[in-house]
Image 1 (cartoon, helix red, strand yellow):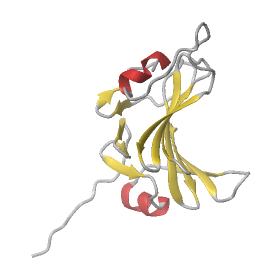
Image 2 (cartoon, rainbow, N blue to C red):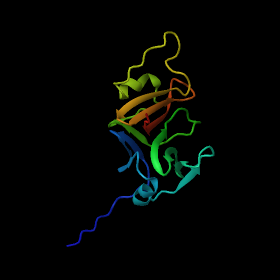
Image 3 (tube, rainbow, N blue to C red):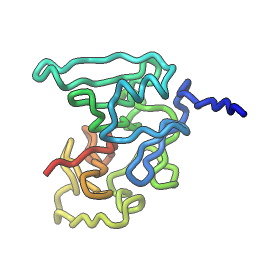
Length: 170
């Protein structure tokens, strides 16, 4: 008896999810530490662009043509960071689909004051009469040994601009 198994391939990205130490583009999982060429050939039918960093030829960035605000960062063909640019302002480029953090749908714009709502283990001390964050400041949330979520404030520090799943190196 022969079984024919059809693997679902990525053909659109209407929602993304940060779940445990994985990132999902719809129902397709993408893990850190995986070879990007293997993942793309097994899981993808969406057009993408690869940009090679000028400062290091081993560093590459993958951007999906119709979903340009999801960036997969690669070092030496290994996925080491996946970033989603979230809504800040109508004039800013951002991912227009739904974003889920540990099963909760993210409300956009994502206010920096709401970080603890999605990441209760993060404790941010007030900075007295100064704003809680500065522009482009990052806050890390450790998922497991070697993996973290990086939360980056936007140009306006009252809004979160980028959420990334990232390998954390010692």
